[in-house]
Image (cartoon, rainbow, N blue to C red):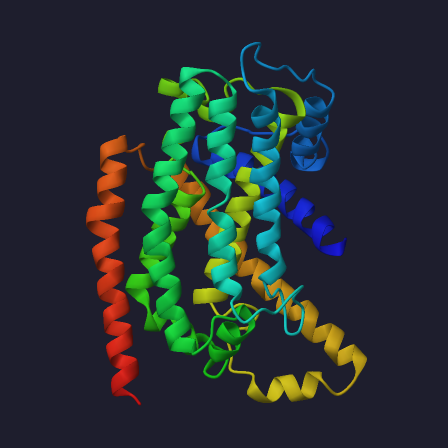
Length: 330
C-alpha cells in the first residue's frame, strides 16, 4: 500500500515537473492556479477524466478495447516489486530481478496492440503495430546491456547489483565501467517509454493520437498513467544499474555497520537511501523531459534502422568486451 501511494505521488510529481520544465524551455508560465505553483494540476486533470463518459467504438471489439489499458498499467506496476529503494527496502529480492522487469515490460506492447485492434480504427491499429515493432527493436539492445551489468556484478538480483557498486562510492558505479552500455540503455529506455524523439506510436501529426484515438474518460487516463509509470520505472532502473542505486557519493562500507546499531540508525539509513535513489531518478527524468523539447521526431524507418543496424551491433560488441574482460580477470 505504501509503495502504491509512493508511486502515485511520484507520477503526480513527474507530470508537474514535465509541465514546469516544458514551460521554462518554451519561455511561458505553465500551470499556476491549481494549488501552490500548480502542483495539483495533474490531480485536477485526473479527476476530470474520471468523471467523463466512457465511450466505446460501435464496431470495435469491446473486450479487447477494455482490457488493453488495464494490461498496460498492471504490467508496468508489477516491475516496481523488484526495485530496491534503499538498503533492505525492496518488495521482493529475486535472483532474476532485472530479467523479470524485461519480461514484464514486453507485455505492455501487447496491451497497446489489443487497444489498437479493438478500436476498429486504422490510425489506432497503425499506432498499435508501431508500438509492437518499436518495443521489439529496442528490447534486444536493452537486454544485452542488462546482461553486461549482470556479468560485471555476478548476479541478476537488483539488490546484488547495487551492493556490487557500493565499494568505491562514486567511482564504483557501473556508469564508469560501462559507458557505452549506459548510452545504449538510455536511448533504448527512451524508445521503450515512447518518448520523443521516439513517440511514433502516438504521433499526433500523422496518427491523431495513435492507439488511444478512440479512448475517453478513465481508460484514456490509464494510458496517460501507464506512460508516466513506465518513464519512472525506466529512470529507477537506470539508477539501480548504472548510478549506484541507494548508495551516496562516498564509499560507505563501514557506514552500514554504523547504521545497523539500532532502529533509529536503520530508519535514518533507509531515509538517506530513498532520498539518494529519488535524486538520481529525477535527474534522469529531467534529461528525458528536456530531450522531448530539444530533438525532432524520427521517421519510422530511421527508428528501426537505429535499433537494428546501430544499437544492436554496438550492444553485442559491448557484451563481448565485458565477457572477455571478465574471463581474463579470472
